[in-house]
Image (tube, rainbow, N blue to C red; front, side, top):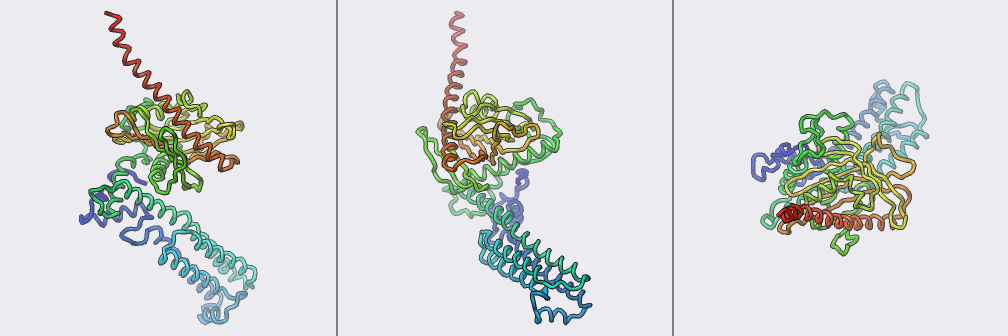
Length: 469
């Protein structure tokens, strides 16, 4: 997580400075999956170290078990190897660990594969052998059984830790580092510096990244200061947050960071294009489900659009026919709240109404407004029996001012939602695509209403003066 801009200040030092080594260290510290100067990532290096530990620990434990059983006779170790039998010897446990050590280091350290299938195979085969071993082995004296049982169970447990670590630590963190690297390459490289090394662009990207959105995740006791006025009359002075509020604040900050990473990641495929120029893209998201991204241009001042979508969300059902209710149920700080929304039935009743409880976090940075959200469990808003509760993954709205276009702004929407229930994929695709384009139609109609009301308000004083004369 990126705590503050000052945390990564040495990263922007650039090549040739005295801070180059420390910036590499900080970059690897914040992105453990990043390869620095072609070296193995820190998280993969830890996995290889753990595999080595597995082999050495198993060998040592086996030797201690045999020596205790034989009363310290070293020839018993040789007999276990030379006179090996699956029913009487435990040396095969060491050989299984040695096999895992050789195979996993070959594929994950030397060949550097980026898939879980090899560790899954080694874990499955190891566990199958351990089960067969426990059934065929002729357990000896009661005094040695605790050591033998412990060795067998520890080997079984360690093999599963290796599978878990690859699937839930190595691959996700390296994937995240790659997305940041690609985003930095796409966003930060300009025509003036086409030969700038990729690592330096990542440093600059992360430095800017922390300055603009890093403070979204900062679980401090006082709420994060806002650039805007306090919409909810919450003082900017220190506010004591409860543990539940801290957790909500942290969850919202992580959702904002993850959603921006996904939004700028590659691999999007064009799904649909509307007559207004709205383009919808889709891809398989981090949760292995289909997610959507919408690009659009709205003819309105970005600050007005952000205010309508964020601070006036309870008025949204009045102009967005896809919603029947939107209510702020909890204020966390100046930039964070929890919202309960009820979505109307889908077209032709193919999808029944759903409700969502999400925590939101927003921030303005220069000419960019961001509002992110993710589903949370709130004890004061339990699921209702009469309506299915959906679940939203990290999603966001990003609003940017377009230079030289008057009051127009670009609008991006990342949608990662699980409507729950059994819904065919083709029905789900049609429903979500239709919902996004329908939302944009409602939004544009609402923008016209806002403009008309503003024009009437601006014209009212001059008319009043004319009648007064």
